[in-house]
Image (cartoon, rainbow, N blue to C red; front, top):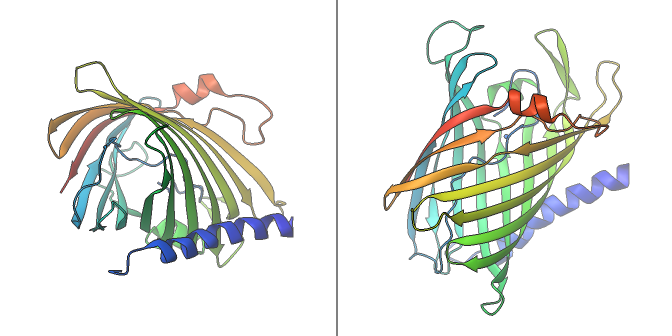
Length: 299
């Protein structure tokens, strides 16, 4: 087990080292009951045939979110700012934040929370072929302890490196496979939240399959991700260390109302498998899913 954990740590840190070498010389919403983010990345993606010019980049993504089984209405949002280098590589800082506009168990109001903060470096087209449309990308990330719930549970930092293999079929259609080893750093094995034992993760892997295409001539873009998360939880409070798994399905459709603004709708399922992979949980996963409106604007 120690060798397995060391492998994850080395892979995550190696990605940060590769990022530093390839950068031009110019230079997860966590709930109160857990530390492993249950949802994939909330990102509206678009396929482009050529990188934009160097300069400041940024944007916001706002997602009003409704969960019918609870009758709750919240938002899951982020803002980001950064720089795009010549050639298309980018470095950004992203800050997630959430609100609970209506939650039966909470008092009325915004109930705003600061989520994860992360520094991200995207190294695009490290290897690519125009003839086949196949390309290779890396995205190292370093997370900071801005999330109060995770910080109370002892969170210090996390390092991820997304390894991406992308197949472009046209300027508006692609298929992509991503894999990301993750090293979590916590100051303690776990915490007790609302009377429940919460085990902190130490290593994790995320495997993501994505498909995106423009629907005919409508301008609508369909994005379909499927993600498998496998996290090793540390022993705590008499519980032994164990692996916990999640499979999440999160399709969305967006429409460009302006050159830098997209509106749309999305649906995110709950966990589609049992945590120990002993079976599926499809009916409950879709019944407990959430519906979202999407507002995405960029500079």
